Structure formats: C-alpha cells, structure tokens
Length: 288
Ligand SMILES: [Zn+2]
Image (tube, rainbow, N blue to C red):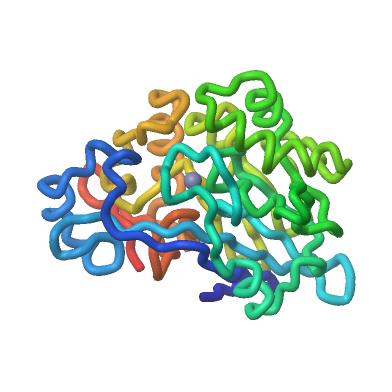
C-alpha cells in the first residue's frame, strides 16, 4: 500500500493485523458503542463490532540524500525474538517483516533514517535484531531519531517491568552503538518532512507532517490508535500516560485537520489506513 504526497512516497509494510482482542487498548470501544458507528464498517470494525487494527511500519521516500533519495522508516513495530513482553503473543515472534520490507524495495542497509514517534514496545522492536545472542542495530547505516524528552522519560521511568525490557533490547543497543540522534518535538528532518508534538499518549510523543508541492499528509503515531477515536476523541486508551492531555491533543488536532485536504495516515489503522477527517455534527468521522 503506497501513497504519493507531491514528490514524497509513503509505503506501508505490515508486521501484523488483528481483529478483536483490543479491549485492553480501548476499553470504551464496546461492541454496543462500535456497531452504531456505520462508517467504521467494513474496514475498521467487523459485523460483530470487533475492532480491526494493524501494526505496520511506514517508509517515507523523500528527495535528497543518496541515489535513492532519503529513506525514512517511521516506527519499527514489535520485532522478532523479543522476550518479556506483557502481551504473551508478542514474545518470540518469528515474522517475515524484514523480507517483506526488502520485497517492498527497502533492504535494511538502504535505510537512512529511523524515526520512533515514541518508545513503546510496538514502535521500536525492529530497531534491533538478534545476531548470535546479541541485539544489534537492524539498520546499520541509519541515524535513529528519538525525542529528547521521550528518551529521557523511558531511560529514567519504567512504569512496568516489560518496558524496562523494551528499553534494554530495542533502544539501548542503538544508543550504545552511537546511532541515536535525540531531537526536539518540532524537529525538521528534510525540506518535506517535519515533526509536530502530539503529547499525551507518552510525554514526548510526535506525529509526522509531510508537505510537498502543495499536498499534505500526517502520520498519526499513537495520538490515535483506531478511527473510532475520530468519532470519540474523548476515548483515551489504557496506555495513554496522560489521558487528559491525550484527549486535548486529539480534539485540537482533529479540529485542525477537519475538512481540509490533509491525508491522515494511521499508524495502527487497518487497511486502507489513510483517509480524511470530516466534521460530523458535534464530532468527526474518518472518510476513506
Ligand atoms: Zn502503538
């Protein structure tokens, strides 16, 4: 799945798609709440009201850089061989993500930049891979961009033991290899690509803005996990570290993006993954 924004291309590479079992993320999204939201069907919820979600990386190709232009991987999913994850079936994964990335045209040594919108388990996994019992950087030629505030938070505060494991196997090895650049929440990566702060889900969370030739797209990160939050921006996932700040961020951004020609690409939105925010009475809907 690919989108063009002026001179920039964004390609989705899926690690895992799931239907249902997401109540732990969005406890308010009961079947009774989801079924009446007709525009969620069929792409984002099934006929029983179960949510469809996706864990994928988004590869941005932008002008500049080497002969291939600039190649930026936004968020690196769960990764293989990881242990100590709280969700049991996120442990010891053996998924063909790297082969799929290569088949999409992106061998891992062709990546210039890795950007983590935040440092949760499903956004940093492929930062590293297991080689002869050691975690090594998966993208050895890339600079890994991480938020300065976000990095400081997760280095100091592990709210749960599994998050300490995530930092140790997926963040610290690339930092120790000297590949991490700590950036501000409004950092500009290239002429076309910049970050905006979307704080609340985590203390240093960012979204990614792509602007080229008069066209605009935004990669959400986890400021929203599912399109049902376009209709219900007040629904804060159990993982939002500051639920009220996350609500304020979602409402402000949705208001800002509504009824404009801005392509919104959801970091956990199931296919077709991208669409536009439309005003819908007092709230909003996601139009694909
Ligand atoms: Zn996530």
